[in-house]
Amino acid sequence: MADQRIERLARVLVEYSLQVQPEQIVVLQGSPLAEPLLLAVFRRVVEAGANPVVRVNLPGFQEILLSSGNEQQLTRLTTLDRLVPEEADASLSILSDSNTKALSGVDPDKQRMAQTARRDLTRRYMERAAEGTLRWCLTLFPTQAYAQDAEMSLADYQDFVYGACHVDEDGPVAHWQQVSREQARLIDWLAGKREARVTGPETDLRLLIEGRTFINADGARNFPDGEIFTGPVEDSVEGMVRFSYPSIVQGREVEDIRLWFEGGKVVRATAAKNQDYLERMLGTDDGARRLGEFAFGTNAGIQRFTKNILFDEKIGGTVHMAIGAGFPDTGSQNQSAIHWDMICDLRQGGEVTVDGQPFMRDGVILV
Image 1 (cartoon, one colour):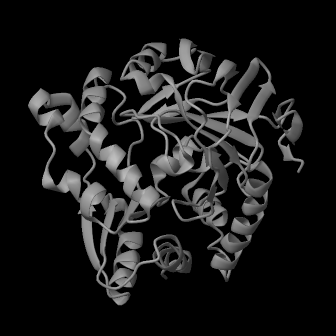
Image 2 (image 1 turned 90 degrees about the vertical axis):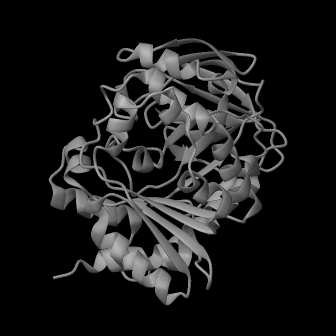
Image 3 (image 1 turned 180 degrees about the horizontal axis):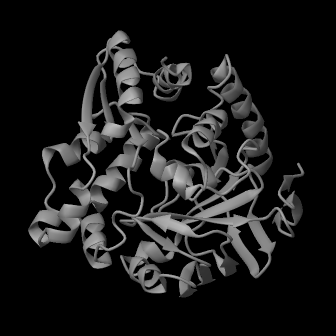
């Protein structure tokens, strides 16, 4: 029997998140494991009168290229690479890995080389998203690999994913519209404020948000969603932050990350595991040492850490920060080949004040 939650998810993605219109070019990306969701979304895109373009990535493609490719192959940009940043009207990426650690043995310098070559495309992608000429969304199809990372059975993980998306109930769009209204209230309160301060265990960080815009992440760009984010003033970040959870990126798990900032720039960085990888990524370019994002997780339906940033950064009662590229629609001017999110859990002894006023304490938003 078909899982009706997949059909509901496809409908929300096409009609609510991407708002697909007739004659648009809509790019769909995922692995063969995401076939049920790819088919359901493809059908709805066709029914909407749009033109779907499907890119199915076989497991092992990226690993082979990064392991065996030379500089020319890693830095060459093809027509397909340019499709989403330059031509598509909408893009849906479906996380659907069969092995989340497949790239853990790849040379970090090769990963950095490939990312750097795509820096201009990343910038164009963010510019078009800010202009409203490109709608994009990132979602996830439950696989055994993600379930194993979360230390759950596949059935339990499916329940977790679809529950966080609220597609296990009728009327999921109404839920996300309510999320949007509540987050808009918080953004209204933050408007015109100057400085945020984050304090907690081994954390005391100040950053300016003056003149910057908080974005209401209500299911349009990520699904599930539940955050408000901005880009801090680039040279304003001062102090130290310890990130509560391991950060998993490109197959590597970096544990107990601690960053020290002066004048907006990371001047010292440590990690209990994979510190060398952390330092190499910070050396990607000048923007990699600055914050491109500062955000509050607001999704009370996500309370556990699952080693997947799509869900973990939304945990209600947390903040997360990203080193690297900022989103232009926040006012961020930080440019980089990377964008790496890291999570700080404030639910036990943490606080955020804004212009000296309490905003969040012990994970509870107070305004």
